[in-house]
Length: 327
Ligand SMILES: NC(=O)c1ccc[n+]([C@@H]2O[C@H](COP(=O)([O-])OP(=O)(O)OC[C@H]3O[C@@H](n4cnc5c(N)ncnc54)[C@H](OP(=O)(O)O)[C@@H]3O)[C@@H](O)[C@H]2O)c1
Image (cartoon, rainbow, N blue to C red; front, side):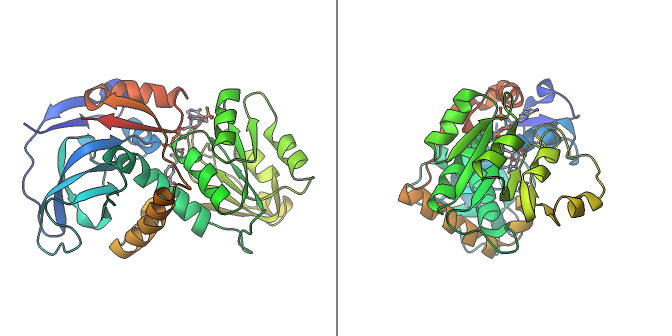
């Protein structure tokens, strides 16, 4: 019988239960996929706790890779037997087999294995839209400094490498000296342990007092004020997560007094709303992975049934790079 990890109410890691369920045939615009590996993401925590709400009961998980078993009416870009990978909304990847919308599923190039595919789609496509499409008004040029918080995590280590490939000087922050070292080994030009150092002062030093053109901030509450303080005039705060808690409400006037700043709060799911946009972004991601410019580092593997342990580790800041769930 097919298995899935579900929640029936929001809560801690213990809210996740392994259940058995029937999985039917795909309807129009859908596929059925059998997973070989599943990606773990911090958004899974927000959905488990109820910070991000979904109808219950809910099968968690938004990233996976496997083999297409069947395609529904109208699906032309995939066929049964194809290797495939995806970042998806709605959630539902914490399972062995599922039916899901085909539009967010891409064929996985032969050179990319299933574990890598499962680890990289949501995180890699996120780095793609941030570094390529979430830019200050005058864009980013080689040599420019950007600040990337939590740079030793799943999204972060991909960003360090991709930024280097683009010629950017990525200043990393991370929560330990070992994590800072990891960010440097993956292409960051500077790294700041923001638990022991004042990152605002360090960024000012590194940039000769000028500040950075963009801050990519997924930490949220704890870093928001400092992120505004390290931007140069007309700089952009790209807020994209809440690992430390959501950013509290603020008065827009603060953006004026700190230098006519811009702020945006993006989500991948706006960017991958259509099949064409998803494929174009995925092709860009596949190219940097196939070239070796971006290596997908998987530092933790947990069997699907032990997903609660994976959530505990992620929330405790005990992970680096990507985490996958195995079947
Ligand atoms: N908006 C979007 O489109 C989008 C898409 C994908 C991911 N995201 C966001 O990007 C971030 C990274 O995602 P990920 O899956 O790759 O996770 P991750 O970076 O591997 O893990 C989160 C990291 O956040 C840091 N952190 C800082 N304060 C924390 C706190 N109080 N509690 C827990 N962690 C804290 C930790 O690193 P340190 O110990 O180094 O501080 C931790 O390892 C998440 O915030 C996620 O929601 C957003």
